[in-house]
Image (cartoon, rainbow, N blue to C red; front, top):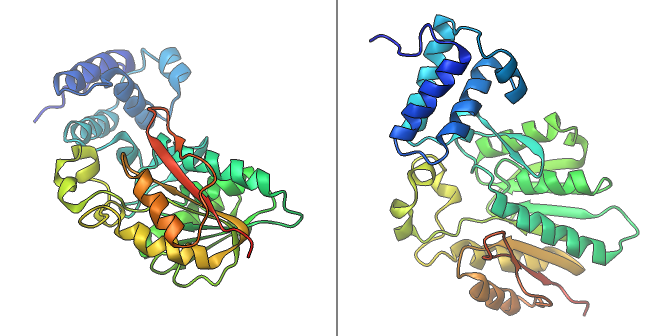
Length: 293
């Protein structure tokens, strides 16, 4: 089959690709086309403009066509490129990691708020439960230069990805990664524990957008029958491993914040503020402190 992109310039290929993506029903066809072209040619937006007349080679046309078909088939741009930016940091992804989303940055924001209130006179210790790509942990280590952090995950592939990201960001000497269920292998104590656990009810997963249900790892999505299995496991573990005055911050799905707070209170944690909402107004980062005895 002939490649319709063969013989086109960068600019004409961009227009043709955008039209094809748009006809496939993709909402951000123009942006996706620019990103895919930039990936093939290793050019930013300025480079795409200044080299608009450059013709595609046969190899470049084939690669671009393959990327386009993957996008049309519902694969997210971040999966196609294998990278995603989170908190301004470039992160490599793998099949065992979620694509980090802007909503999760709300957890980082709340963690930094609570950390700054602690006014520690020593380097803080942080744990990220179910670290995936390492997104939350590495964002916090980037923002707190003297902190040391531990990320846990059941997936060895995810841990390898997180370790690679830590090295690429120059944070490997302040990060460790452990294979275990939630915090089971951690002794603590910690000043901050953070987590974006699986919280989608099992029956809801087939109803998710194809970009999520077909491409994100189900281990990182499936929260059990009611969506709270991970919280029931990790909240008591976190409470045991927090220092007095330390804080637990978890990401919540829509409508889950109140039940999570109840689980935190049952684990002897104290709720001292409302959940932090994401940009859509959804209560996203639920937090509690371990009070001194």
